[in-house]
Image (tube, rainbow, N blue to C red; front, side, top):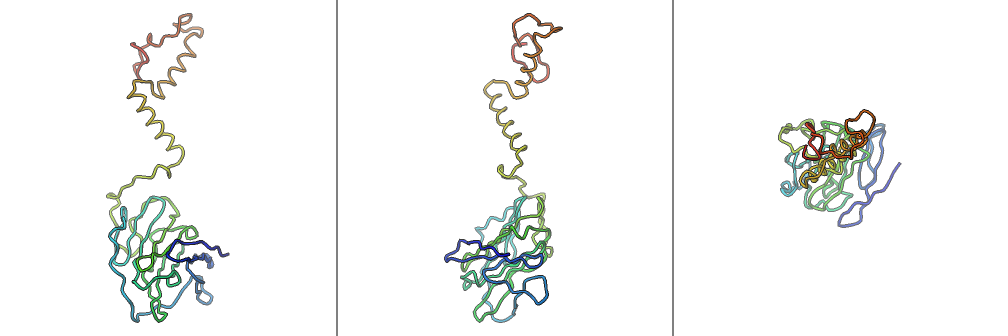
Length: 244
């Protein structure tokens, strides 16, 4: 199955997603496959190669790290990887990115049809390869978006990397990514704070008052037959609605 996804580059380029026996290869052309194999592959060479420039310092690597030829950052749900490329890598067809559940390989094509591997190895955790994408900023870098298989914080991108200290990361989550139940709790906390600042009852106090109104005049109530007046009761826990 093949689906074409447009990528925002300086020219019109189409990224094709090719499923290869359980692996997922992303490329701007048809991925090569080893005969009888289950992964995409292409020639590698140690011939003439224009080295990539130093990594772009403007890339925010919060919760990530900067390596020799690439850098990465993360949220609890996904990873963003930036791989620097030589000045002469200007078109999508000069790039091949191979993504599998626990494997990544990035290569570029130099003049003379020579392919050079920039990044290759086992990921420290699994990704959703079919939901991951990449794009090229010509002559600058390849941006790769990786969807994590599970929500967790990674202490490295590749298993061969030195780990970062997870105690030092910013573990804050975007409000929009929180489950609905957690968002509702936050909304309630904000509303209660606004009520308190205005001297008005909070959610718990309103619930308590509702219960009190229903029980005020029932049989056996000490206030039966009297007009509703919560100031007659002192709420020792949860505050009061009157003078108490």
